[in-house]
Length: 77
Image 1 (cartoon, rainbow, N blue to C red):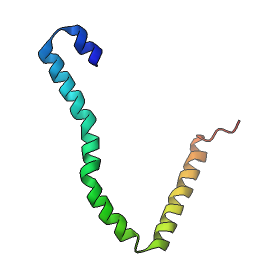
Image 2: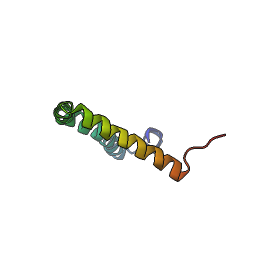
Image 3: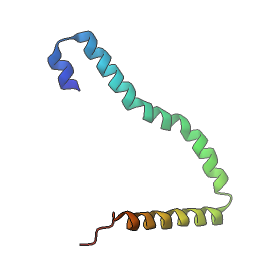
């Protein structure tokens, strides 16, 4: 992207392209940063039920393992 802007010679278009690139790059980071407080509150409410959290995470791991085997993503050489 930067090489295209540097070799093209059109400054305004280059500034616009780099601005769009920067916003696209920064948007996910800003979303994670601003939502961290919400996630933190939810995490603390989950920590009140450690058994349910263990069972839930275990089920997720089992489901992920089944999915890996089912899709053939596990290649044993």
